[in-house]
Image (cartoon, rainbow, N blue to C red):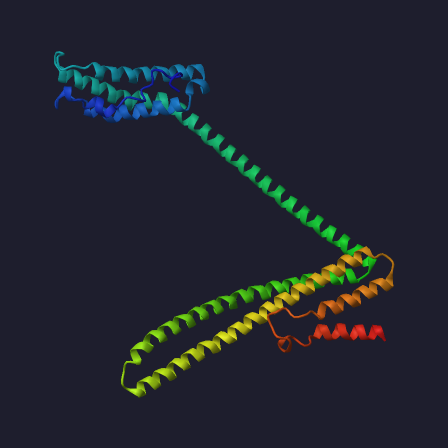
Amino acid sequence: MEEQYPDSPRGIDINNLCTDSRFGTEANFVNAIKPLTEMVKDIVKLEDLDYREKLTKAEVNNIDRVRNEVIQYINQIKNFSLALPNPVDQRNQIVGQIDSYYQNSFATAIRPSLVYLESQVKANAKDEKQLRELVNKTEAINKDLEHRLKRINEREQKLEKDQISLAAGQGIVSSKYLSEQFTNEALKAKEKSLLWQKWVVCLSLALISVLGLLFGFYFLVRREDDPTLKIEYGIFSITLLASIFFFLRIVLRNYNIEKHTESSNTHRANVATTIQNLLSVVDKDQALKDALLKEGSIAMFNAGSTGYLEKEQMEVSTPVKEVITTLIKNGQN
C-alpha cells in the first residue's frame, strides 16, 4: 500500500499537528481538526480499497486532485509560523478554506466513488460467504452420503454373511446371536461389579478406621474405674463392628455374584463364538453339525466354578438352560 500511495496522509496525526505548542493558544488550528480528520479518513479508506486500480482514469484523477488539495492544507499548517505578518488572520483564512472545502467540494468529489467501492467489497464478501456456505453444505452432504453408503455396505456384508450362515445351517446365526447377547450381559455385570467393588473398598477403609478409633478409645476407657462404662463401651464396639461386618458381607457377596455372572457370560460368549466358527467350516455334514451344537450347548451351560461363589451358591438352573437340556434329551431319544 505504501508503494502504491507514497504520498498518503494516513500517518499524519491531525490532532497533534493542529494543536502544536508553537502556535500558542490564539493561533492554533483547533477548528480545523474535525474537517481535516474526516477528509483524511475518507482518503485512507479509498487507498485501502485501492481506488487507483478499480476506478476509471477520470475518477482516479478527480480523487488525486482532492487528495492533493487536502495534503496542501496539511502542509500549510505544517509551514505556518507566528513570525508571519498577521498570523491570526492567516490562521483564520486557512481554517475557513479548509472548512469551506470540506462542506462544499470534498463530499461531492469523494463520496460517490467511496460508496461504490464499499458496495463492491460488500457484494464480493457476500458472494464469497455464500460460496463458502455452499461448499460447506456440499461437503456435509458428501460426508453424510459417504456415511450412509458405508452403513449400507456394512449391512449388505452382514446380510451376506447371515445368508451364508443360513446356507450352511441355522446354528451359525443362532450362535452369533447368543455370542452377542452373552457379551452384552457380561459387560453389564462388569459395570455392576465395579460399583460394588467401590463399596467394598469404602467399607473396608471404614472398618479399618473404626478399629483404629476403638483401639485408641480403649486405652482411655480402661483407665476409668467405672465397670459399667467399660461394659457399655465393649457392647458398643462389638455392635458397631458387627454392623460394618454385616454390610461388608452383603456388599462383598453382591460383588462376587456380579463377577461370577461376568465370568459365566464371558465363557458362554466364547463358546458361542467357537461354535459359530466351527459351523462355518462344516459344509454338508449334518450329523457333525448336530454333534457340535449338542456338545457346544452342554459346554455353554455347564460351566465350572469361577472362583467367586461356592458350588452350592452357584446358579442351579435357568429357563434357557432348561430348554437346551430338554432339546438335548429329546435329540438323544
